[in-house]
Amino acid sequence: MKVSASFLSSKTIPLDLHKLDETDVDYIHVDIMDGKFVPNKTMPFSEMKNIYKYTSKRLEVHLMVDDPEKYIPLYAELNTEYIIIHVEIDKDIEKCLNLIKKYSIKAGLSIKPNTPVSALVPYLPFVDSILVMSVEPGAGGQEFIPESKERIHEVRALLNEYGINAVINVDGGVTDKTVVDCRECDIVTSGSYIIKSDNFQEKITSLR
Ligand code: DX5
Ligand code: ZN
Image (tube, rainbow, N blue to C red; front, side, top):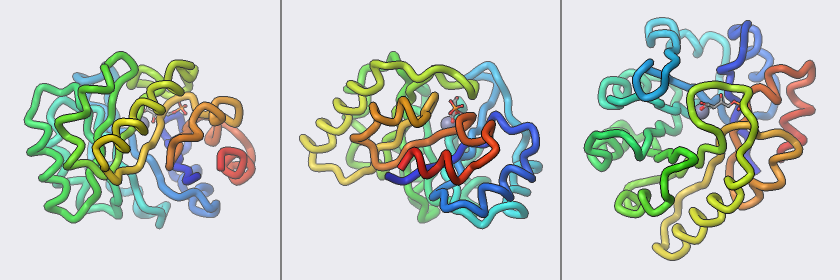
């Protein structure tokens, strides 16, 4: 199981990124919020781009924004492996996914807990990753929603049915307890469980 670490809950970002860089974590999960798609807002790109100073890990950029086209060219400049947009936005999703791929970056589609999994179907041919939200997006430190296990299973069944070779990732409330519900995933994203501990590597290992 691959592990992606979110630093959304970090109060000391440079230090925590440096500490993550010394672990075997697979990706740094970068949460971007615009104050519209979700109420909270993260720092602007001019500050966020400095992340490269503290980590050489590949990035997974989770765009919780209404208008991804504004952000994709910016985050494509960084050491980015995945850019993930939301299926719920009122935009041309296929166009956004193809824009991500134009930068030779893997394209991901995220789905909120109350959106039917069938909403993913039209975009399956264009995705490299599905990010199943196991909390309502917008904040770190929330409880894992137990129904997420079944939703991950539904996504796995859909990928099999359509013969799509995309990875499944889960995001929100993932700990050593809730990870047992995420065994059908390829990647698990975890924030506060790792960041709020005093031994990052131990927590990362417990998720694999
Ligand atoms: C929630 C974010 C998540 C979050 C994960 O809106 O997309 O990436 O930071 O953090 P935890 O693991 O604390 O739920
Ligand atoms: Zn996220």
